[in-house]
Amino acid sequence: MKDSSCNTENLERKFGRRRMLAVGAGALGLGTLATALPGPAAAEPPPFEALLLMCIDPRFVNPTNEYMLQRGLLNRYSQFALAGAAAGAVSQHWAAWHETFWDNLAASIELHSIDGVIAVNHRDCGAVQIAYGPDAIATPEIETQTHERILGTFRQEALRRHPGINVETYLMALDGSVLQIGPST
Ligand SMILES: [Zn+2]
Image (tube, rainbow, N blue to C red; front, side, top):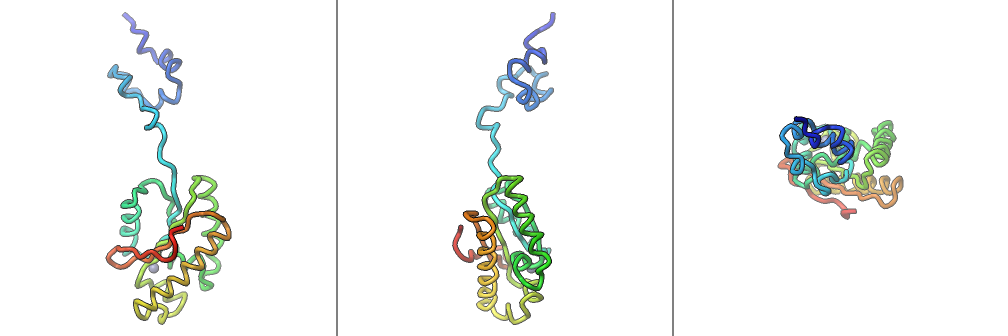
């Protein structure tokens, strides 16, 4: 005897096509439709947050992403890498890269509705030495000052292009700890 409650057509009419696709064929076969259906809260994924700008230095790939995960941003950020991180977006040494980065930020804002950009520079950055000279990171104090200038310019450029965007700028140490540079927005 045919059970009309398990008829796909009837269920689609009752719950709608999108919910049917979400439930999947496996759940239907079990006859536990009520528990398999996602509730209203589960149907809304968390919004995308920000674009991350990081350096290409292999030592910092995992620590930088680990930092983002610790902030609860798994699958909620875009990622862009340039030699020197923010230095690649503002240093005259790499002027040809600037518009590529800013165009990508604009695209992520448009496509993913993000409202923030997070730049994570790091200590012992060879790219910063290339762009600003070896003396730019001669001591930890001078190095911090160099990154304050780079990240300050980055903040200005981001806000000039996208007034009101959240700009977060950090300097990561070799142990993965981060120092916030400048204000948090
Ligand atoms: Zn670097």
